[in-house]
Image 1 (cartoon, rainbow, N blue to C red):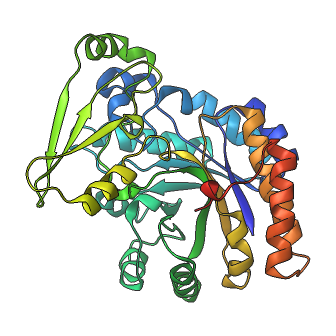
Image 2 (tube, rainbow, N blue to C red):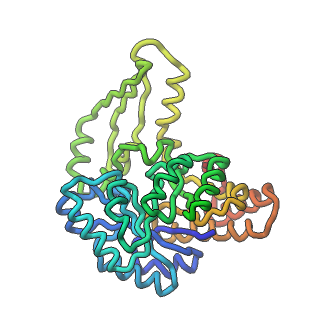
Image 3 (tube, rainbow, N blue to C red):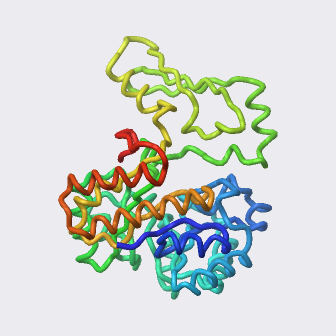
Length: 345
């Protein structure tokens, strides 16, 4: 079971390799893309500038450093879709990425999968593509994908079924193991998460000056009032405080469900699925993925170390309860805080 870790600087590679990373992934938003479309229309799902490389020179340095340790680098190009106008720039940048030596591309957009089908580059399917069942595996196999990142909202039993199907089709299954888990399904989310970058200071100030109310009505006539209390550190829509009001007949159950779903205290918390590995040991999972391209090198190292040492414990063939107990102790030792049930997904 390999560990796929995020990286944004070639200078961090050695530290992350020493911590136990087997593979790396990254994103890039170039000056040309910024000038033409801005990071608000990022070519990958991370709209923040600071979580991406800025040039192909940086990418080449990263690839060369990673390859010096025999570690592959995968480039994330997983925006939900691209406009017709963006395709010329996109394909040019993909060719430059291939020339820089990346080992695979992580793709979401079906049109782009079609364009790249005959390219001499390995294709991985992003979790944003919502591969929730066997039929979707058969569908995406036609595009020649070699690895599929499964959505994090799957149950253990569903992962086992899909992993078996993927291996049967010679496609490597991959799972998120550590990430800021959101209750929304990533591949269906239309929220924009890049509003708190410095480039948007003018927008931030305008939103801070005047509170706006966004009304979203559903079939039960409930209204979600988004009272925007914006500031530069909480511009992600996932972190806005939502107040729930009933426009007509009170429906306490639905109201509480929506309130829980949009609770800013629970959303985007650090989430961990390491304890679940004991139930997936025989499922032939090829790799586990750590989210956090924007995290510091020290945080990435801790995450990698935690996952690596947990896998080492798993390989001792100990019973599930003992594995969970040892993993929780390891969590406390590395992160200097107790493991909580609220961190599990």
